[in-house]
Image 1 (cartoon, rainbow, N blue to C red):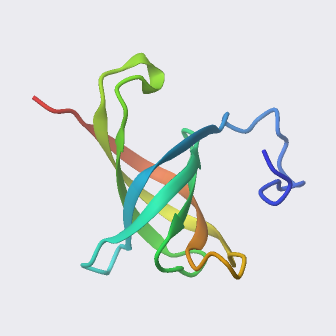
Image 2 (cartoon, one colour):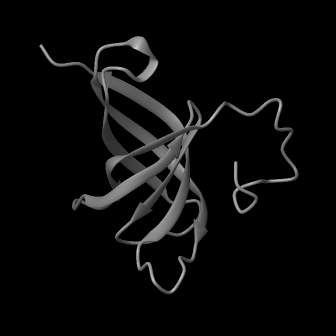
Length: 114
């Protein structure tokens, strides 16, 4: 984990392992109707870090959806639909206009194809 994501108040032995996973994600604030596009940087069972087209304030409740590849976790591929909360919003470097968001996953559902 890079130092910019490290939180010294958390015991790293209790944190869920993170997996680098470069893949598309769609997200929106719970009260919004329009889905925004982003790119996952890494994910764990408890949260996700991604770059998106629009930043959202910390504590915003969000919906997220993305496709897990078949090889992830040894299970068949599935769409994941999550409810979460923005816990960190990071300003991107000047050369990258995508906003970096870290979201805690509160609930999730797997939707597997037929």
